[in-house]
Image (cartoon, rainbow, N blue to C red):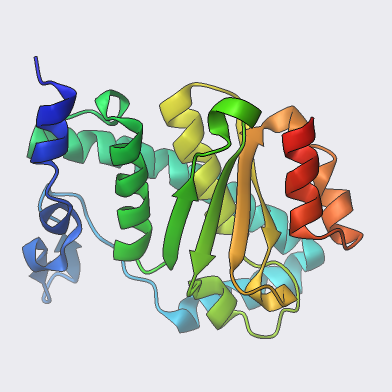
Length: 218
């Protein structure tokens, strides 16, 4: 049986996420990573076009649609990570030490161009709250006509990744955004019922510091 120490030592994330190992077939229009999973690349123009189409067709509901897309995307990511870790390292994310799972998720975001994600689990045991910061957000850069939060798809992905690994009913909310004037994106992951009333408070203009403090005081 593989030990935690062996798992940590075996995780060559540069090889796992690196594009050098990808296989490209320009004639067929396909790309596959080292484990055989097909890779799809999205340009900034495509993302901007999707946002504009959703905005034209659904108005403010584009945020919920992207969040739900992120939830579905995150489920698939969790499944792919399990499959690929098993194929390449004979490892399972559920067996990883917390620090290694955090590193895996952060590396996934960087490798796929979502931005520089940093997860903070320091409040997880004491307050049941995980926070994440996101610098160089792709959505914040591309959706430059928006003046509020834009990383709803990212929030959905984070929700699904932590639901998958914890087996708990969790949700994720973006509580600060570059597009709303913050220095970086800030997300909180915690029990779903604790976030139910958070959306209206964000819309009312409560600061990220106030929201986070109230979650940790509950």
